[in-house]
Length: 341
Image (cartoon, rainbow, N blue to C red; front, side, top):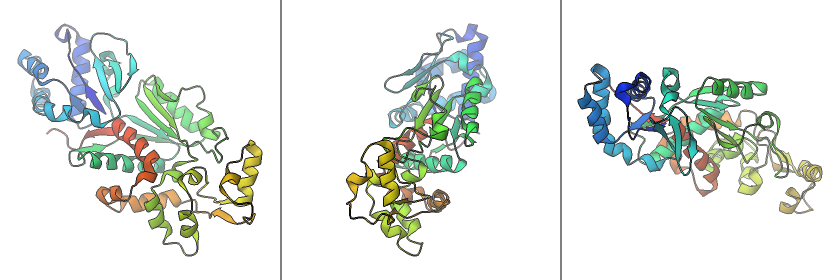
């Protein structure tokens, strides 16, 4: 994450402020977070003699990197603005500031890597790969990386993990499948258990439920084509006939027949599938053939096996929902690629 400290009024006389600042400084030095502070303010702290040893070395690095770090603030969806004037956190402030009190950081546990909660560890890997494409697009890949503590588990485990980490004062990013197979359907299973939590920004969290069915629906088109082209038969051909709108609600693992699509229209009282396919379509013909239970894993293996530069070249305008989500993931997990030695 990017942490911004504009000033530290009264720090010398307040042990809690000193502790919070020291914890943030150490996390920056360990490469867990990006830190920016006006170089003039950093110099004042250096000259105060309050810090020595490793902390002093990190302060000098913070001062020297201030101009470059400031230039990247607007390349991400948000940054943490630490308020040293109050013990109460404000929360998210439009357009791009998560305002937290210094008191949040008095416990060193609060400056560890952020928590990423999802239903499967593979989902997290998938989104992190996309977040690195964002770094590449902003020419930041050589100096920065994206890292989290990964928390996964389906069913009740997901909501339990989410609540548990919030109670521990953690900062939590949570991305869930909607499991919707029709635009008129409500969110299903795991996501439905989060109904008490507002979507988007909440207290110490950002919660997102996919507008499509699940992570598989966001696999970049050219990546999917590369993976499916290795399968004999018409699987790839059928997949490439889909439009982005149709693909959004197709169950990639199980596939979708025309008759099942019409049944979904009837169940939800809205013609979505029928509006996209002619009535002469054979009832048992495939709109999308089953891509298999390991489709996402195979795509992740493919994406991991090529460079981020090559992956970026395989992403186009059809993949904007994935691109936009991964920009937020990058904003949560960005940190220096190297610790300060």
